[in-house]
Image (cartoon, rainbow, N blue to C red; front, side):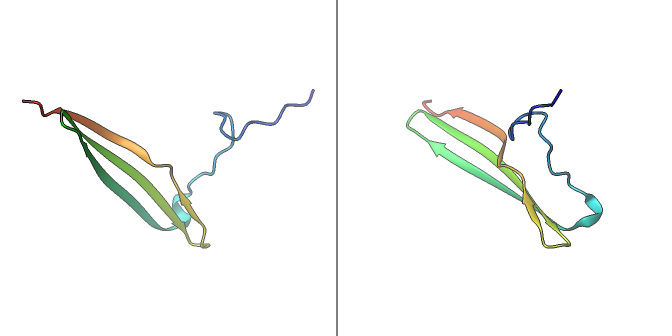
Length: 75
C-alpha cells in the first residue's frame, strides 16, 4: 500500500534541521511594536532568527510573537 504524500504545512512534514557545527553566524532580530488608541495601548514583542551556514545557505524562522501587553489608559 502506497503512503500518500505529506502536505507541506503538516505536522508530519519533514523540516530542515539546524546543524550547530555547520553554522557560521546566528542573528536574532527583536522588535517592539507600540499601538495606541484613545482608550488602550498595546505593546507587542516580535522575534526572528537567521541561521548563516558555512556553505552560504541562509535559513530564517518565522516571525514569532514573544509577548503582548495591553494597557488601559482611560484613567
